Length: 299
Ligand SMILES: [Ca+2]
Ligand SMILES: [Ca+2]
Ligand SMILES: [Ca+2]
Ligand SMILES: [Ca+2]
Image (tube, rainbow, N blue to C red):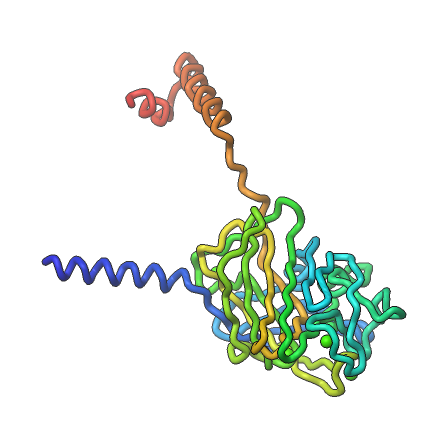
């Protein structure tokens, strides 16, 4: 292999690595997606996508433990009351909204709702994410919201482009949005732009208090960039020009307890214990498979 061939090989290898790590967006498909209506409140039981056998369940939409919403009126925590636009009064760039036929939110009388109302659990005896509750965006308005897992829970993307780690439902399929991963220290990953054209109908339509007709709910299933690791949550962002995304739901694959990183002092202690362990076994009856001890002692 000459120098140029080697250079070419290295370039191809780097390209292949980049391609495997990039996000892949799958359109939701109504065949394989199932929901149950409880009066006007909708429970999703299965969400399917075109081009992959990866699916999401209702439980995948109940992973949020806290969060916040930032719109043109300020920042509102998980249970803070956010003023709502109702009946064509477009004042807020992003606010809780609900379908005309759904159960009123607890603070309905004061025309307010919370992030918890929209993204937390609803109803009983088996609670679910109420797919009739959404965050409504305005055409040219900017807003964003954060959703966080329970304390200590983390999500890491695998290196498999066929598995969906994040799914998002949007009313209308007529808006774009950015997605960021929120790192353990609160910093953000770079933005991932999700184009409205990459979604697909999830199989049902909604008419909310803010609009006067039905619009299809459109879903996106995202296999994240493999570099997105140990995330404690996600941010969804609407910018001017995105046509006001109206987010119905955000689901993720299973989270795990955050990885335990031993402190340097602990590592030293572990090393000492390891040597002690080898010594004990050596004095025991049957050292058998102590190759690791033997190898470490040779060094
Ligand atoms: Ca609004
Ligand atoms: Ca994946
Ligand atoms: Ca929309
Ligand atoms: Ca309406």
